[in-house]
Image 1 (cartoon, one colour):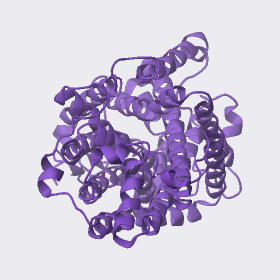
Image 2 (cartoon, rainbow, N blue to C red):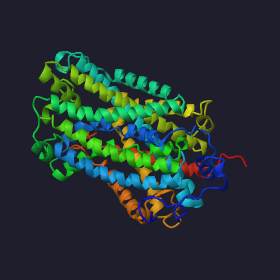
Image 3 (cartoon, rainbow, N blue to C red):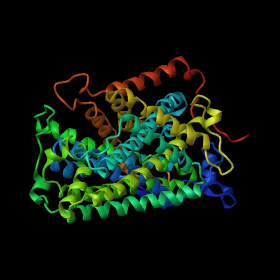
Image 4 (cartoon, rainbow, N blue to C red):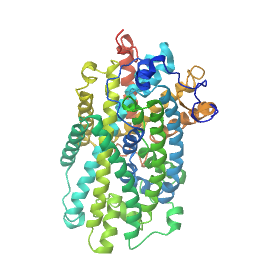
Length: 529
């Protein structure tokens, strides 16, 4: 294969990975990890399918689209969702391709922050690594917080519908009950992630299968059961401008509607964080990133189409006084079965399918969090690093697992004080992560443009172009996520995303200036001389 084309570099070519002489006695993965400065401490038992499964389960289109469907309906409705999803999906795939190329060159659990360090060299490497690492890990914790809190909210909606619905005297859980649900979910996730990697691999593949089958079942079942279905003209052309948020510009409405898609398509850095536990990591890590995004885009579009064909009255679905309390997809599922069979039990069961998918999503997110925390602390970047990078007898970073669960729970506690504060906290889940995604890509197309040595998977002559498109898209969505979503702007309607991300940036930079620059040297070897 011509190495200038996208794909696996030809053997012995200028872009190929050159193995060491003793590779016949030591696995090539362990050798490559040793070249990068680390000894093998985690069990390398994940196949390509298992690596993909973890990431596919974190992206989990059922999770993101179910929890954000109300946003899509509000800002543009069917037209924004149906056409916005493939647009965002294609641009996200471009970001993923750039990340996959770098992952192939540096297959370590540290992922993004390790890449930044190596791409910037000895002078700027520690600083770049520090910024990338903290945006990555805080973004990951915020993702887990958001996923598990959304599951806690869905459980409360399921209970509400099971006890008669909002209009039938159903039980409405308080914010304290929801936070208890959230804590219990995180506890289960921490317990599962304390198991050996062979068990996690099994759960991960089950999660991927559940997500895949669940999407196809729901996208076919819901419109099939519905007694009233939307026309193809409505699904593919109707643009909802009646958002009740004081926004009239169609372009602005369409742009805000894209948030549903971009929020869903996050977390695919997990394949990179699992590379030290993946066989043929420099090939299967990149494949995990690309395949998880690609398949998610395809099945997610099907899910959007299937559910939207069951939408007949947008204002009723978004009404906080409906049986599901304004939770759009829950109301769709419930009313679809109730209108045909006289009872919404079937819809509640369908919501149970979604809840299990979200549970698996959160489980995989904690897995990715813990590997990032393990790697970051291994390089001394976190307080009490010596505690967090320890592994147990099953070669699981047990302390990092429980730390990730605890921090995610603490982040959710802001919901008890203010919904505005909580939304600001979880906004870091998308912007914080994407900033961490963009930084190593930016360094690859600038500082390391000529010095970067690709691994087996590379983009050849297109690497620079794809990288710049990826960086520009991240800059674009960073602006989009910071725009006001309601007018007039008040303390309650202000979008606090730039405030939250700005505070994180100030904390990271300040900690570097006043402390870390004196002792943090970026990734450090843990191999004895």
